[in-house]
Each structure stands twice: as structure tokens, then as C-alpha cells.
Length: 195
Image (cartoon, rainbow, N blue to C red; front, top):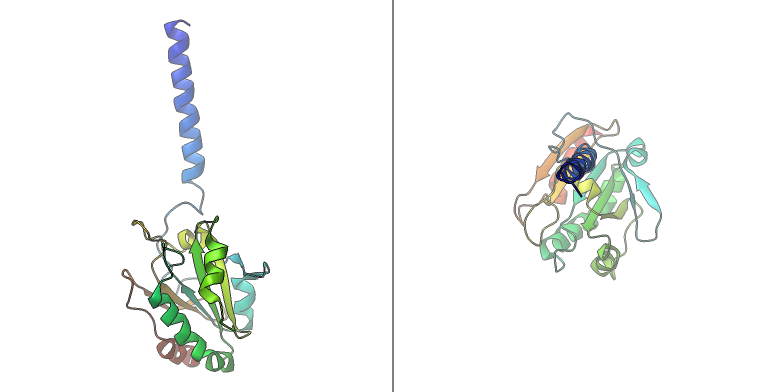
């Protein structure tokens, strides 16, 4: 192989790498975005439930306000603070239902383990009809909402969003630590106010 051919192969390899990087870098599911702020529009998504049916955010918002809670998912253990927060919202589920609100609990994680770990998380829990426990395999919605916690053994910043029936963000709380979570009573007060 001549030097000229060798250089041409290197240049071709670099160009191919740049093209591959360019398509990855412009993929909206990969790009880091800022989380939606109050007054902005919700970013629609469709996610699977444990029974393999799916929910679509836009479909739920037609029915009334939607509370979206991003959990930490599987981070090498089941997060006790996530468990406590989910329990808090489940205790108030009837009040959210009376306010025509749905609650979406998102459990993110590696596609290879997220389903098994999510099943462990909700074992023994009965979910009311207006509470949807969904999986985010591969962290697509985590990235779509700009919630990726890039640290060892982390997935997403624990967060709570409230969308009104028109898809407008009415409440946002993003915790940059394990604690400092939204309480169901605080979110319920806003749900009642916007209804």
C-alpha cells in the first residue's frame, strides 16, 4: 500500500467518523436539553407500562392535568426516597382523581434490567387507575427532559412536573440531590388551583 493510499484511507475513516458523530449529535433524543420551564409546552412521549401497554402524555393531558414524576430508577439499589415519594402520591391518588388529574411515575434505567428492577420496585403495590407506572429504558425521556444525572450510579435527577390539560408546564421541581422531593400535598394544591 502506498503512502498516498494509506493517507486516503485515514482521511476516509475520519470523514466516516465525523458523519456518524454528526448524525448522533443531532439526534434530539441524545442532545442534552434544558428541562422545560413553567409556561413552556410539555414534551410528548409514549412509554411502556409493565403489562407492555403504553401511555402517551398527550392522550392523558386531554383528560386533565398530569403530574409527571421522574424517579431515579435502578441505581444499583431501590431508592428509599423514591419509594417514600411514590407512597406519598399513592396515598393522595383519590384526591388527584377527584381533581381529574393523572400521575405518571417514570422509572428509568438500562434496557437490559429496567423491567425486572421496576417490577421489584412495585411488588405488592396496587396502582389506582389514574396512576401510571412506566419504564424509560435507555433514558430517552430522561434525555428529552434534560434530566440526565451524569454521575456514577445515577440515571436521572428526581423531578416533578405538572402539565395542565393544554400541555402547559405549570409546576417544576428538579432535585439535584437524592432528597428535596415534591410532596403530594403541594402538587395537589396547584392541581386544584389550575382546574
